[in-house]
Image: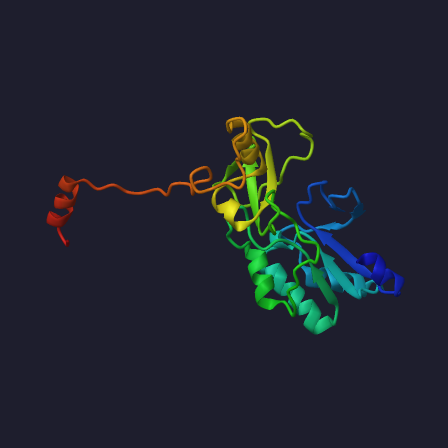
Length: 229
């Protein structure tokens, strides 16, 4: 995108946060990299643009990658830059975390953006369906609890340790059933010779059990007799 705007004589700034390739780098999974301004919690986008223009530098647009990690207040600063400075802002990121909960930055972006557009290149789940959810795996096992922001390991290669963190995109069905590509491979390998393990049915691919609170009859009677019941 930056190249296309530069070809038209436009000048912009590139921002990113917590890129897998390291600090102040915007990278793609194809291996392309470019320098960028690292967004910290104390960065103010309004001040950043004002500083550039105060020193006589043009700013026609901002490219903001990994925008899900931005603070809601920083998203509001971007909206102010658009409205009051007439600077175009192109923000990129994912909407929800590995628990399917919206990132605070993404939520504020959806609330304030002039336009929300899904990228035309669709990611696919291992089953071939459109991938809509991000799964976090620790040591190759999908998890649904933990800190919201954890950067995946980039130096592990093909080796998976018990602590290595990675991410995999899944369709909703297999995210809810916690079925990653590794889980699929395990089921296929465990299937009897000649048996058809795909597609997974409910028995093979069950919904993870929900936590329940059991109350015995004696405890229930005690609750009824408790003050205020």
